[in-house]
Image 1 (cartoon, rainbow, N blue to C red):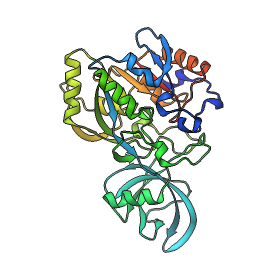
Image 2 (tube, helix red, strand yellow):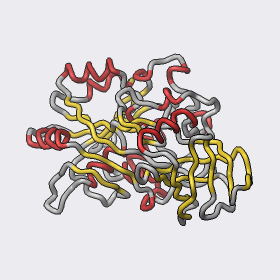
Image 3 (cartoon, rainbow, N blue to C red):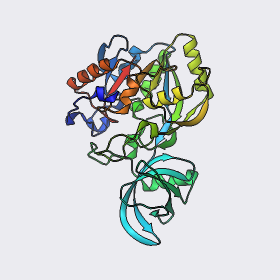
Image 4 (cartoon, helix red, strand yellow):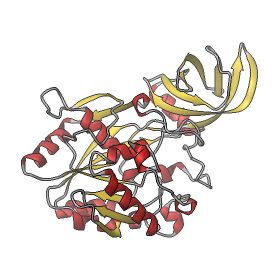
Length: 344
């Protein structure tokens, strides 16, 4: 599917710095409104999205917070230092002590150890078939998270030209640490905009999906979506809010593809949305019938990215391609620090 959504993205449209460092507020980035049924586009600023939402429409946001996920470590085998300053990128949490991770070095073996600091080391317990390994850490739970915050840096891909602080990789409402890449669709929201939406009567609910590593390395393709398993949590009150919106004919609008994956995974055998915690590797494509979500707020996705498959479940791929070409003509910025797309 994504091959049909191939297009040329000029280097000048890769957002290399946060909007705040470009002299604008986070909620003043541009926003292209794309209408599902007609393919019609409207160009505005993100701060004006209240004009396109109605009273009792429901926005569902991802409450996951970004953690530092890149570390420079010492590589040790049989008590011998093999290499210093080896880069490790966390890929996803397995449990309180174990993470999948990418080791940016060749020749890693079982039982190799990586020294993060005098108080933190990790041991390779399995070698996976996606160039990833499983690491068991010497700390666990909140203590391990505190170590990550003390020692790590946020993941930055090649289009980021400056080591921006972790704070720039957060949404204002993210509360639960766990994402190794920012759930970036919500980055453009400010507290002021959220308040303005609530004053209009727009409802807001939260799910939680901890985003995993999407690239193995800067010059490699996305991870296979079927191997891209992420942890999610759907609270009871969010299910109640969604059911209420559906009952009254109001729209459920996901803020980010992560929210769609979490919600559409949580459908039981009777077609009902249920509150639950679990893991999802759901790959949504043009043939997927969405049963919860009516609209989407998202950024702009790279050519042939698997996220474009998901967009194709909401709107005809040809309309996406046409709209993306228009966004390029209007000089929209791509990636986590870029501009926004509202699909209704």
